[in-house]
Image (cartoon, rainbow, N blue to C red; front, side, top):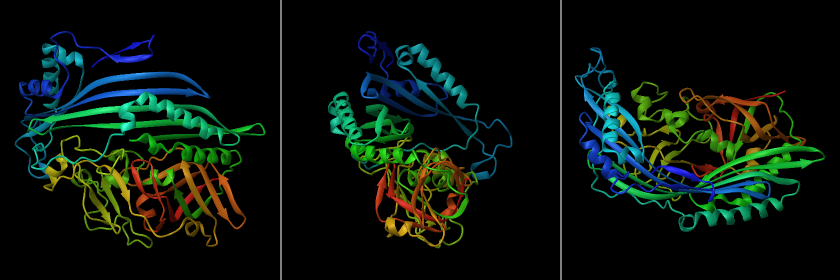
Length: 484
């Protein structure tokens, strides 16, 4: 459904289709794709979103909006003779006699409402798909089992998203008012109610509803003419999981500490990552393309010969000296941000233990790369569940001669997805030494995710950011801090 802006109502509303027009839905698109020459296989997904938005500047509401959007994503597969005589077969085998190309299209309501236009768009998709050569594979077929039903809907947001955001704003104001020398610079609340529908050419079909709430806030701490800000972004399924009072208290403390934080000294040795920083270490991006651990545990990396290790290997190369990593992909976790009923290929959500006791036990595989490797597909990754250790925070912070740095927030954390190397600027941290504790900021942390896990101790207490579920802190034995 297309959208127009109504300035009088400060609302974006969907435009009703004209009488007799074809609506944007999976059935309409499935019929059109089935009738498209050269569309040998296909997938289609329709998303219907209604989003309440609330913008706050200081202690005043800047604007409220409601956005309604209906969109569709179609993937078209075309079987054809390979363009090059030397085209490789699966996994580098003999040249294949047939290739399969794919093309992805974003379709609008205007496309569905005009049969000639829709026919032309789909034909263009077939042409694009016919230009690429990939090994063929079969799309998922219907399962004898029903899709799982993890809870994904917050009844509070489902019932009245706009009203819920107004109440959340009041909670935010109260929480900030309780913090000395801290004020709210700005905040943005988005609450989304979504329905997802899917269908493919093999007969897989399904739909489900979900909710999502996003909070972006900036707090400013001031003291004696100096000021420092702290920025936080939170995404959850349920409003209550934002934990507004606790979140404000934590980030207000960070903002006050930033006022007198100093650049760390250059050193190499033990470094603790806690809270947000540790979640970024394991899940720097929600998608596997930017996540070294998920990249290296994927069937795609194995097929493309990019894997650093094979099933049965320690992911650290050498045998770990500290705690051993246990990590699972869990799309079934109640109200997890990356929870789902079925993935983008129509595969049912499945919890998969990827790493056990530091050893790669199984690669996660979407439909395509599972077919290429001849393994059972697991579906796309979900939330990351990391096993906790037995150490207390005090034990992790204990001195052993050299100072211990603890980092709570990075300005950005973007490791190389293949090598695992990273250099990340320190937004805020703490130096623990014989004189006590002092805040630090600036400088950078350098290391490698896989070698860092050779010597690590995990805390017993837990932390989550909605995607990462695991220990609240981890002490790595040998990382480098570059500072003054």
